[in-house]
Length: 412
Image (tube, helix red, strand yellow):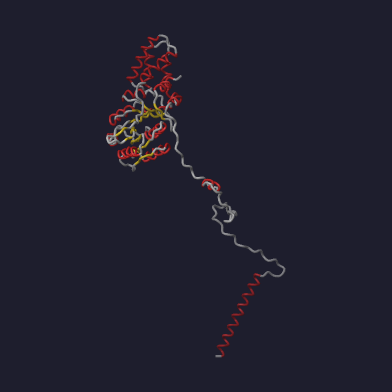
């Protein structure tokens, strides 16, 4: 027993001795010897943001404000001012409703733009008619000039015969006399006695319900039909009318959005349906909305139709029949691209057979020297050109004025 106790005491003493040696060694390692300066204290750097690339600089110290140092915005300050003070960009402003230019006199105002592309025809005719001797070759050149301008065969022959007779009777041919003569004959061909009003009067149903005027806008893809519908809304709003737009072009995904944007700019509501939905249903709902809102006019933008596709053309006829359940359609405007020339006449003929076109809208008239299409399409359909597009601007759709057009043709 004594031996066990002795062994335990020895073990305790040995452990205490070893512990003392470790502590002493540690202290010797941390404590510098006398006369030698203590090594500098090294502290670990604070954690920083991850760097990008070898050249990345460590983030600098950013000044931070305590909650007591942050001032409240002044009373009455707007959200935009607070955002701007904080250094962030202000939110975009919601565009307001625009005021379109008055429709009256637009073509006169745009005459210079029109004349830049159209007076090639007038200058060519005046040059030929001013020759000292008007032989058969000269008259053939005059005829070719008119045909090149898409005046059409029958109107060209008629104009040449009238010019030959009047020049022969006139005798002397000063430039002023020839210009006056040519202006008079071109006006006769274009027609000054045609009704070029876009009819939007509406009416009253048998039940005594007042209905708005209904205008169908039809045409081939790519003629600018939806844009024309939006611009026509601006023309009508400028004349003081309230407008509802019907986005019945349900086959083109962007058509309804595009039309709605045009409507929002002038405060016109747009009725639209599901993509690839029934266009006749959308047109019907648009007129229904126009009646409920007591609107003056409903403009229905139909889907672009290929004149060679019988099924699509039949569907266009269905749109018109469905809309007529509310009452008669006041206008069917056919949009034609003036740059297509004689091909536009083929399109016009087929559309007229399906929906009874009442007026023509010629777009891109400022982009072609073939202004004779105005004469040709009127002769083909026996309906007047009522509106012309003269540029890409929002107010570049103008009521057609024969005098201003002919003056642009022959120049000053």
